[in-house]
Image (cartoon, rainbow, N blue to C red; front, top):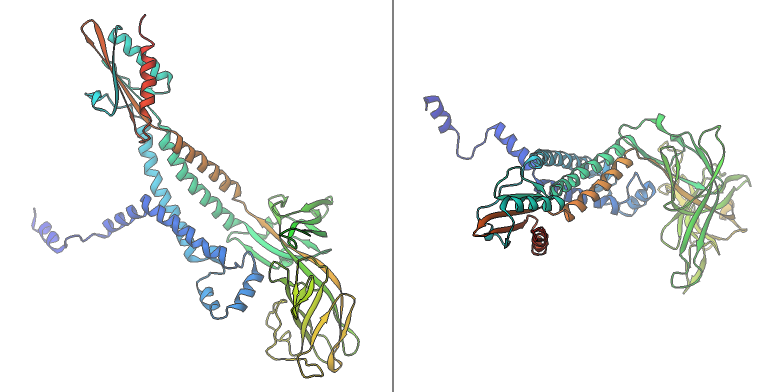
Length: 519
């Protein structure tokens, strides 16, 4: 050993790793099966907030309502990207690490499996009778003749034989079990790649359409739109559709009376501006497919048709207004804004009851069907924030600088109104007319390029899992030697999967071998 080597050895402390050794250790840790399983578990846990907390890409209205109800938690959730979990940096980091771990895990195993696949069955142990499952018998056949019979029997049962000849036969089957494991691991990677392709090149958008409204597939028509990082507007299909009719089948009796049983949105659509007009009944879990785009029915509600006249008798607002359901009874919340009203702006905020009923002095809605529709709204006037230049949600009313309208008794004035009725507002502000109710539907339009890849991965995963469960690697050895006037035969079997079913298999093999004895 030279002086320089001794100096380097002394300077390097016990257990200290060089940069290269540290990288090699980190790579081995990342590509271990244990790490892959931990990352897979972390990915599943990381997806939980995405299914519990409203997501911008799925329900932007739900996110808005959640933020209103939890003002203290909202800044924390926004900092952690919990309203956009699947687009967050931390979720992407887990996703990428899992893909790298899987590749580093199964690529070396493929090489090992390839060498094992080409390898011959191992030679017979010296003492077959020491194996747990073994049998012996005597035959009048010659050694070579009986071993040849054994080769034929085992080959017929799907075993691969060792090439060498002599006083023993070595056979093995079940090589595809490890292939099943590898296919399963590869399929997980394929599924991840499929989801990644969809997330990068696809898009998902939502729009609320009142019955009779028309939608054209361009960016300006969406209420919310979530494109992938590599999305291009040119890939959007040039279709359009109109919601002609929306029907809900309500249960009228039984323990689930008042609940919706089925939904059906009748669409008229064209796949291109000059295309033939077609009809389609859009239902839950029955999307309309146009090219690579799918159109889903994901929600519905009510849009009361209201006309607001100002103090001069002029119409300041008119048309259906979307109210958002708050629970399963379709009790809905909504806002009406009439910023052009004179002498002062008018804003209304309140609830829509589809089937209104007073119970113990409190207003309730007993079912989701609009059998007794009623509006109950408070009135505000003054600065509603619409002229501030700041974008404002149509589902929110800025009351910070507005004044609540009071009745002659000095209490907040509430408009309680049903279809066909008109209510005059105090102080000559104008009037509110409730003309009727129209249903609205929430439509999701999405394009997911990698869904076929993900589906293929799922199918491969099932095939690989079935292969790893039902394919059992086994080894069988047959030895024969001449003793006296007969031939002593030893047979042993080994189940490498540890299923403990070799006794019956060994008996079947021995019985078949003995049937080949000479008469």
